[in-house]
Length: 156
Image (cartoon, rainbow, N blue to C red; front, side):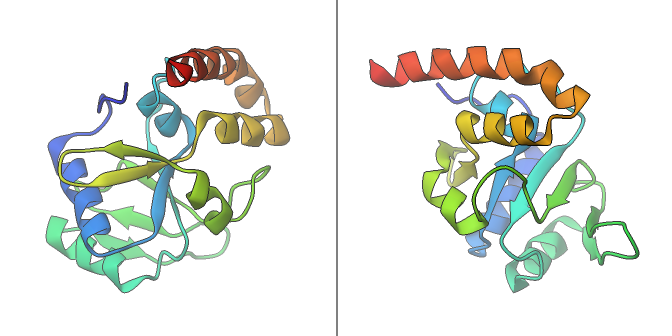
């Protein structure tokens, strides 16, 4: 059911290093939906961290030649480096529970040697509905349809 269609090898290496260093994080947003079979396209991968200052984040970044740039003014923290530029740091998600509550419900996707925690489709939908931005309303039909397909497959 789950297949990696969105990560380059270098990105998988970074995600594996985060997991190896016991960093609590999960993939959220449209990338999470795509990993669960939704027909989504997005330019970046949103990673929700319990705490982006976890020491394992810097260790993983060092392994791939990336750095963490602290937040400034109204700009959130960000990763800089060839193999991490496609990842956006998420510290808060509206319309869902806390990081720890949502992590308990996360879908686990095997990425060959480690498991990737992914926000479930129904929680992505809840957040998109809560935000109610035009771009969120535009993707809701596809997300809802994909959620129905996933639910049917899960029941089998």
